[in-house]
Amino acid sequence: MLGRGWGSQTTENEVAQIARFLPNVRLAVDGGAHSGRWTAALLAKYPQAFVHMIEPASIAQAALRRRFSGCKRVEIHKWAASDCEGSSKLHSDRAGSSLASLIRRDGEALGFSFDHRETVPTRKLDSCLGWLEGFSELDVLKLDVEGFELRVLQGAERLLERTRLVQFEFGGCHLDARTAFRDFWNFFIRRDFNLFRCSPLGPLPVRDYTEAEEFYAPTNFFAMRREDLVAPKPRETFRK
Image (cartoon, rainbow, N blue to C red; front, side):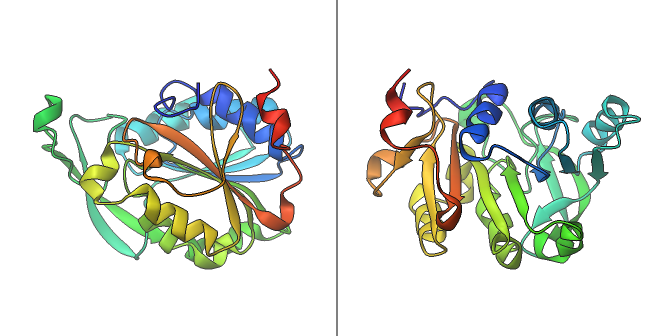
């Protein structure tokens, strides 16, 4: 009920909780778009939004182009968000897998291998500031990049200065990335964002760092820029 481990198959709930913070979304970035489910849910909630979708895997990329064929509210980019410009290996257990990552996971304990590889271009999100042309800011940056989230954020310092809300997933893949939740906490708090955990009760404020947050089952978080934070009010979070 507190949202820890409530990170799988919750896409529509995630978007509904974004609406608790932002009544209007004009511009969003879907980092790690895969099947496009998050973008589809966001466009259903905010029909006037425009979404830049980032998906490096060839099979997933082709499926996205079929799914959003003719949709003028999206632009699909075939590269991986990173903290550097260049290229890298995209590792997965199989072609088209939702587990594809720039980190080669140790899947032995999980019962699968990460032997499928695909070379993909990488870009920093700070090289994409042109996306903001015509917009005062980026409303939502969503990251589900299987353990590489912090590295992507480190390549988006200038973009974050004009971003209102970041949604990111934290889970078992961060064990392979050697990234703790404390790293995310320090990153966002130092940049004047407040953190919330996505939960069945709504977005729950993470007011202080504790080791209880080092919970490696998939969990979604929201980081909201403090100057924009007018909702949700803490007590309203628990009313349903």
